[in-house]
Amino acid sequence: MAKLAIFVDGGYLSYLAEHHFRTWVDFGKLSNEVRNTIGGRTEEPLDLLRTYFYDCLPYQSSTPTEDEERRFSSKKRFFYALQRLPRYKVREGRLMHRGIDARDVASAHAALLLDEGARFARYLACAPTPFRREDCLELATHPRSVLARRAPQLLAEFERRGWPLPLSIDRVYDSARLRSELGWQPCFGPDDVLQQYAVGSIEVLPRAQWIKDRVAE
Image 1: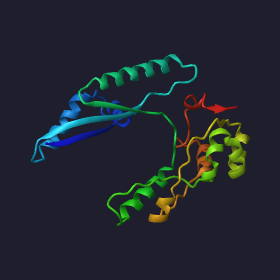
Image 2: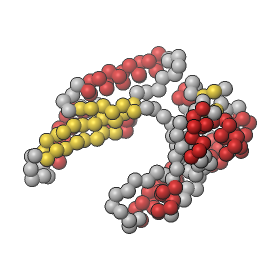
Image 3: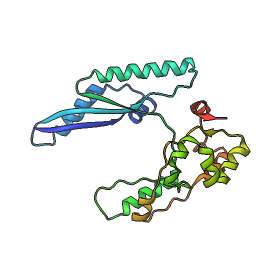
Image 4: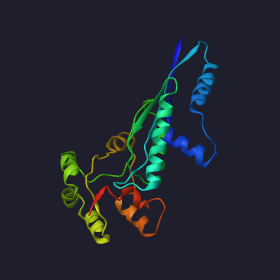
């Protein structure tokens, strides 16, 4: 008997259900429908091994508002209900904000579509980083010192605007493999983000309540 595992991007699916289809999803029924649909195309019986549901709890500030507490507790109850479904496993992640210019995303996808190399490969697309591997520990504990050394102009822009800096930078992304193997080059970095911010682009405007207690004055 063949085995089937289903992997669900819970945040994306829930967003589509709420904002586009305006419906409620019966996740137990959804898994069975997926199994039946795929099983109808296979020659041997298909057994549902497990459904993995990937999502994270919503943001809560250090002093949560009533709305934050309501949304947080509602999502926890939802995860608990999913865990009780047969062969369901909730993989709970952590809410973080990361960004890349949509135009760089598009060009990276185009590079992948034109590539005639291996049928499967994993790449990371991001703007060039000013940081080096040896900066990692100091970025986690004293990011201002590293920014002053590696990106003084960016630090100056933060200080000029009175923006607080992160308490910690816990990871650095590097697109070196994508650039070396596929010849892809990102075109938009921090300077472009600042320019978009200056003109009020919705691509970069943050929601202040998401970052209120994650930064140092």
